[in-house]
Image (cartoon, rainbow, N blue to C red):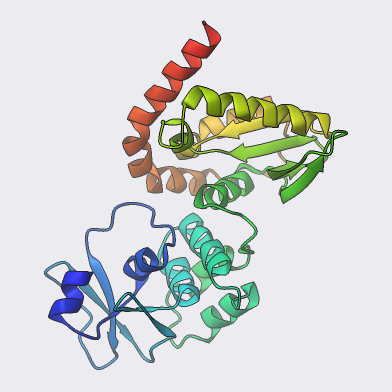
Length: 282
């Protein structure tokens, strides 16, 4: 992106390129740079740069010498042209990043754009975005949970036990008294401290949640969502029941979308399995 800005001063970045600049989630490994150009320019891809024609420039913000469309505008664009779970993750991230943005603003932007391409597709993600989910893994997990046919969870529910400890559960199903925690594999790969110590802290956190009223706590990571069936198996095994039919088509497409992450995480998964084996076998 910096190289492109040197060659073309004043260029406006869009799509995943703008998302990278704002620290929004980018799922997969884009090999090209996305830019927005006036409607009179050519929409084409040359030398790793893809130009997207826009009838009118959305909000453009400068950061570190680079220009990019706003997080809210990026979210609507990705919701229109990427997988629905990717759109939900982008919209949630935009709402967390920009305190002035609201879900209704994202919906209105989608409906008011001159081009109808992707408008209907974006409605699923934009109609569910709220910014309460705190990570991209929570967003894609929420999409998978809906497509499994499970009831929608309460997000960021607070729990207090008799000692005064207060914790928030990422997902909470009150009928099943089940807490869901999308942890992510990198949390236990050594980057954030000793994995064994982190796991002990997680067990203590689970005990606090259960003292505060949870019957069980389910944990999962990227690979569990990418493979689909491990997440379904975990939630069903913890007593969660379906209330609607499973959307197998969307789940299959979600798995394909997250495949690159699963491949990259295989060494981390092996480390996690070795750590679990050592813990369980002394």
